[in-house]
Amino acid sequence: MPYISVCKNVIGSNNKNNWVDPKPAIRVSNTPSGKVTQRAHTVSIMDAQGNEVAKIVSSTDGKPVISCGAKVAIITEYPTEVVE
Image (cartoon, rainbow, N blue to C red; front, side, top):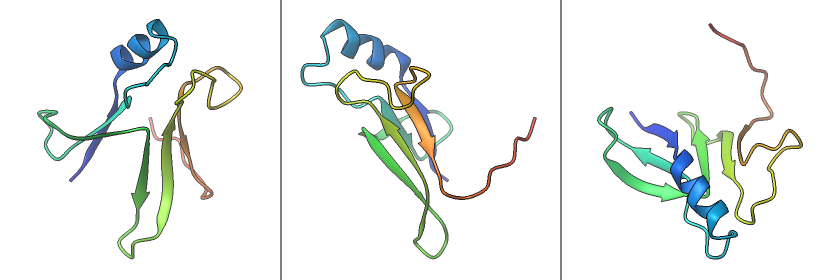
């Protein structure tokens, strides 16, 4: 099972370096220990049939991904349910 996380420290480093050659802020691990297997600026989440159901995107130029100022966002065309 993949574990996807956002590295706040990478976003901070990219800010500090004025987004020149930004490092990927999204990391993917195959274990809960967090050992990184891949880093990316965009990660697609697929269903069992291989269809993209959501995408995680991070800024590559320092501009917010959405108007609230977020540098990373999850985007989907499907309905969502808030589970607390």
